[in-house]
Amino acid sequence: MLNYIRKHQTATKAGLASVTGLTFMAIKKILEELEGLGLIRCEESDPKKPGGVGRRAVSYALNEGCRYTLGVHINKFVTSVGLMDLSGNVLYKRRRPMQQDLESQSSFVEQVLEDVAAVIAQAGADRGKILGIGVGVPGPVDTESGTVLTPPNIPVLRYLPLKEILEQRTGLPVYVQKDTNVIAFGEYWCGPSEDVCDLTYIDVDMGIGSGMVIGGMINEGANGMAGEFGHITIDPDGPLCNCGNRGCLEAMSSGIAVLREMERQLEQNASHPLYERRRELALEDIFCMVEKKDLLTISILNRSAFYMGVAVSNLINILDPQIIVLGGILIQRYPRYYSIVKDVAASRRLKGARETRMELSLLGENAGMVGAGEVVADHFFNEMVNEVFSKNGS
Image: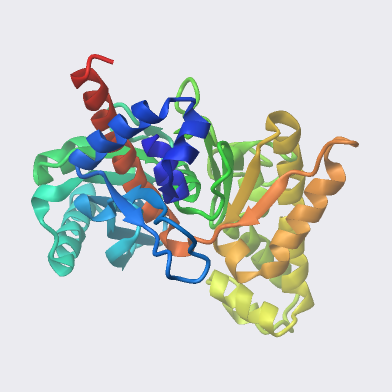
């Protein structure tokens, strides 16, 4: 019931009875207990407003301001820290560029702690109402110990026991997950699709990753390796990937791959406007050239999108997900990328199969931060619900 209210924002007794199969008396009792805990609130519509007829309709909504969560999202270029309410609304956030010459783990941790303290202070939040800290970090991750393992693109974080350190320094529970898992979780709980139970998120950024939510739960896989979408092989003889293998999707389609291919092409094209910058290219250079309708740049991005579409078609044929959400900088900054991925995936799926639903991420740069906070909220809600039922001997 509580998860239904979280997912749909509001619910009536009749609606809850329909989806749960419980009696009205059971529904009434549980709602009273949840109200007593301060987790939900009762809302009444005004019959005098347009569309209002007869008695006031009573619905129940999450009491989002009763607790707070902290979300930390770490990627190659930016670390984002935000304070959220229980509906995933960002109350205050802070974004810090990642120092590419970062030498020590201790200096990185100190920066995260400084940003956590800053968002709490700026939001004026009661620290006693903060449930914990969720962290999304490039994988692989040991979620049980909360240790970052061997992220290929941020070597300074290798084998960092992030959960242990942050819990010791803040006194708050800490939950560490792979970055694309928390983004998928954020899209599941705070995205636009209320009718979705299963969701696959694909991050098309400097690296390539994915996260899966199945039945409202993050799918980590048997060994915590589920969702390493960027390291499926597209071409066994393809370019070398940062993971050590050849022809990975990340080596063919990621932002890093786009920059490498652009540099290679520029070596043979001294008349191109970016020739002098060929060894210090950034994605911003790529997007600027797209705006100028540069055919070389557009062709490289289109090729990246084609390989991504091929990979997505394989994912569809294997998993048949309910919905695929695509996000990341290449999707956000080059709109045609999404169209190519969608068209290629549709053309290569099994004939006669129903078209897989695809959407663009609407959470944007806040997705990882919000999703990390939702991991904390999910622990809280499930623990509290268990306490309610245990108390009543159910």
